[in-house]
Amino acid sequence: MPRAFHHRDFSDLPALVAAKEAAGLRVSLCIPTLNEEGTIARVVSVLRDELLEKHPLLDELVVIDSGSNDRTRALAADAGAEVILASDILPFQGHRMGKGENLWKAVHHLRGDILCFVDGDIGNIHPRFVYGTVGPLIRHAEIGYVKGFYERPLLAAEGVDPRGGGRVTEILVRPLLQRFVPELAGLHQPLAGEYAARREILEAIPFPTNYGVETAHLLDVHRSHGIGAIAQTDLDERIHRNRSLAQLGRMSGEILDAFFARIPVPTVLAGERPPMISLPEYCKRFPAAAERAKKGA
Image (cartoon, rainbow, N blue to C red; front, side, top):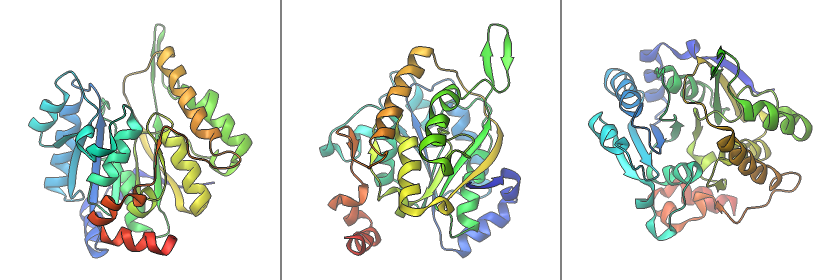
């Protein structure tokens, strides 16, 4: 069972910032986006005001966009984020659509020792979505990867089901984990888009370029570092748009591809990006990674 925390454990932001600075850590936030004009400005402004200006827990806040055709990028920039197109990062690697592509490119672009990810469609954004996942990594050196979890209300014709969200988790991912990797079945939200990890963990694993990325992360981190490196934090409630059944079906197929590429024998899918640490350009940008690559060779 992964170790569990509550976001209140890390809500003393001055103390958390002091611990970050004492440890000599830099923290980067990535918000991956695609057509999020309805929420992105508030997501950026709330997190920037509280966690970069008032309490400097973050050292950078970057929106990495997949190619939105609405006002997402302009609104994010106006709210104070650095905004960059995923296709402009490592352009000679080509560009593939998908959330996992954004996250893979973020590992190269961001400079932090701890990389944090928050989705851009959160309707009830709060700094806890960042400090709740970053906090365990600052306070506990043995932890390398932290997932958020929360209640996810589902809006339906008959009203609001407070526990109805996370349908793919409950009907697909959790049964798979219970059968094949029971140590991970205790994760409340294995597909949560709010999580944080140490750079040296993310740079060493492949990234599916689609929605299989979060499942792949968990399986690869568990295989390489064990359950003790994984933790989860209760973030209370998350409100966001609910996806259609067609979208959930496509997501499920992508998750299955990532899952069975790793169970029982891990392989790399044709549609995955390789570990970032295998790119000479990345090792040149981060010399410490080059040393880690030599040790792992």
